[in-house]
Image (tube, rainbow, N blue to C red):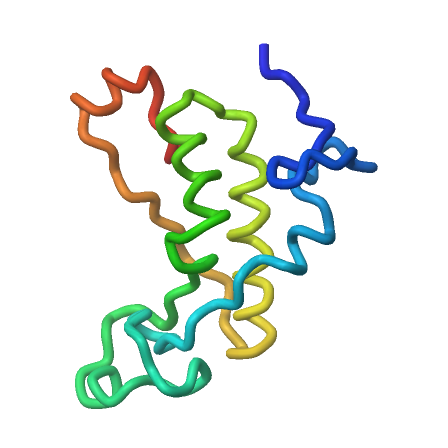
Length: 135
């Protein structure tokens, strides 16, 4: 059975809502997203405009939405989820993805996605971890 985390995963403060996983203070103080091309995600001077490469050869997708760089504190949460068998973090990580998609939807006028893809996990790694974190 999954335990319900009633404390913020980052600062350990009590949460008013059990399903949040992260307090509003920590959420507001997450590191700022780097300026990246909204189509390919590569570093760019303006996060609202496609980079030169995407203007010349647009990728087959409309937009790329990501939460942040793979750096603290997000890196610790992802590593804990993937390697320490902590599936309780799944709702928090899903919430962060959803919040970032909603922001991109407002700023870039994105349509609802036809499909959301998870990066597949190799069978050997799935067996070693005991579960597929992208399910």
